Amino acid sequence: MNKKSLMRSLPVIPNLVWGIIFIVLPLVFVLYYAFTDFDGNFTFANIIGLSDYAQTFLLSVSMSVIATVICVLVAYPMAYFISKAGPQKGKILLFLVLIPMWINLLIRTYSMMAILDDEGFLNSILTALHMGTVRIVGTKGAVIFGIVYDFFPYMVLPIYTVMSKLDKSLIEASSDLGCSKIQTLFRVILPLTKSGIISGVTMVFVPSISTFYISQKLGGGTFDLIGDTIERQFSNPTTYNIGAAISLVMMVLILLSLFIMNKFAGDDTDEAKGGMMP
Image 1 (tube, helix red, strand yellow):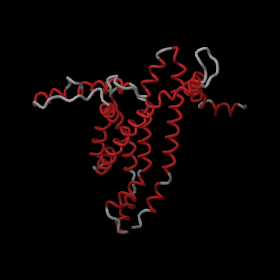
Image 2: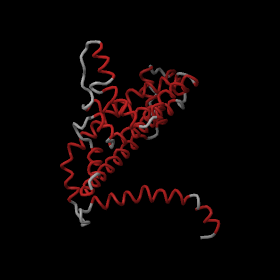
Image 3: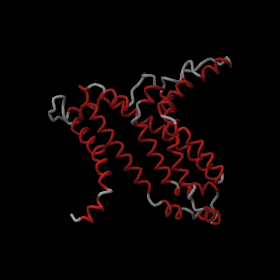
Image 4: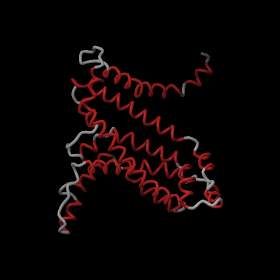
C-alpha cells in the first residue's frame, strides 16, 4: 500500500476499530455463549430450551406492537398538525414534543411512577374528588403507557421530517383530479410519508421490545418481558448461556422485523403519483 492510499484509509480506521470493539466482538461473545454450556462445550441445548420462554416472547412482541401502533395513531395527526402550523409555530410545537428526550429515561420512568402509583399524583386527585382510587402501576397497561410516553418523540420526529418536505403541488394535483380530502390522505399523503412512518416504527418497536427498566418499574414485577429475562440471566454467571441464547433470538426477531418494514418502504413518490387518479 502506497502512502497516498494509506492517507485515504486513515479516517476509516477509527470507525473500523469502533465497529469491531462495540459491534463485532459483542456479537461474537453472544454467539459463543449461546452455543456453549457452562463448561464451554458446544451445545444446542440453550436454543432448544427457549421454548420455556415462548409466552414471554409473545407477551413482549404483543405489548411492543400495541405501543408502536398507539404511537403511530397519535403521532401521525400530531406531526401533520405541526407541519401545517407554519415555520415559527412548528418549531415551538416540535420543541415541546422533543423536550422529554432531554431528560434521562430513568428519570422519566420514575416521574411516571410518581404520577401513576397507588399513592401518586393521579390517585391523590381522584381521592380529593371522592372518586376512589385506581390501580395502574403493576399492570400491562401501565407498561404500554410508559413505552408510549418514553419513545413517542421518536415516532413524531421522522414523520414530521417527511411531512415538512411534502411536495404541495402533488396535493393540489390530487384535488384538481377530483380526489376528496380523504382520498388525498390515503392515496397521496400516506404513500409519500410512508418512509417516515417506517422509520418511526423502527425507532419505537426495536427499543420497546427489548426494554426492561420500564417493565420493572411500571410493571411492578408482576410479569416479565424478554428484556427483564435477559437482564436477570446475565446477572448470574451460571446462566450467561441462556441469556445469550435469548439475546440471539431477540436479534434475529429484530433483524427480521427491520427486513419486513424495509420491504414495505418501496418508492413512495411513484406510488403516490400512481394513486392520484380517482
